[in-house]
Picture 1 (tube, rainbow, N blue to C red):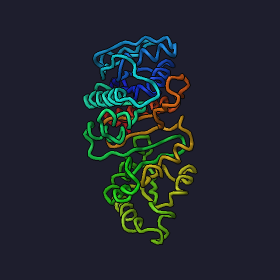
Picture 2 (picture 1 turned 180 degrees about the vertical axis):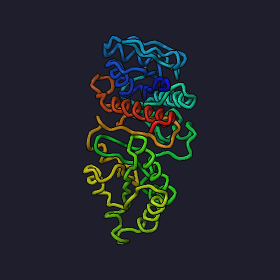
Picture 3 (picture 1 turned 30 degrees about the vertical axis):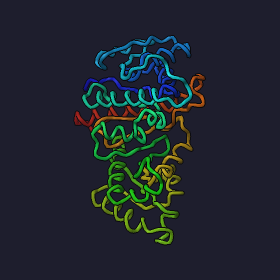
Picture 4 (picture 1 turned 90 degrees about the vertical axis):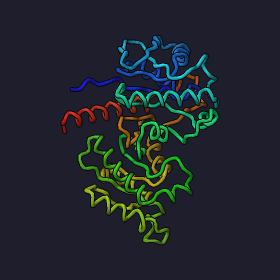
Length: 334
């Protein structure tokens, strides 16, 4: 099998729980992982939590040796002292952005096999003059992807979003035929990447009761339905539009493999309701693997040492699974 490069894990916003969950996860013995961020920040969290880990700076992921009880850090940003915990900070916003951009560059050149990102804070980035709604948009631009989609997944359901970080009023306009087709195709590809040979893709409606035959809106008739038919003509097992309030229940029962949601909260509420500790965010449409925990920076508990590592560990497990699938595909193993 092809030799696998280490995974990159970005430290996230250093004023939040990102560095903490990264350090605590690596303390459990996660192998072949390189942290992109700041050694100053990682040394501080290791000391505060008394983890007994050695923080080692390396210049290139290829130098990684995955030594026991150590954290290997690529210095992706310049921080002189740890920023304040639990509050918006331009320094932290810049640092979290720098780490993601550096990890993307490494992934594009094959120096890392994929990226797992700890949580960032949009307000902190904005305070540093960085205007991106979130990770997905940064990954799309710096990763050179024409179209990306978020897949949120846990043990019970998987969902892909037609529109992501945008106002609900704009999301309705942006959920056009092309956006529907892109999301359905990426949902199908994402299901296959997770080992499902012929994913059953359910497409949720935009309106209550999926429009009720046009009584509550006609987007299902004019846009979503035709996109589903076009996807089926391409050989994708797509169906719908299904009412958004019941389609996830059907997916949990095993009727569907992936649900395409029309807007952010329609897709994320069901996944997060089932437990943040088991949820993972996968970016589809990139040339490299990217996953992340399904939670935010949690400023309210930053520095208290009580942040749960479950979602980050799940994100790491999914990243390894996706990288392994990529290697099999490249080697012609189906």
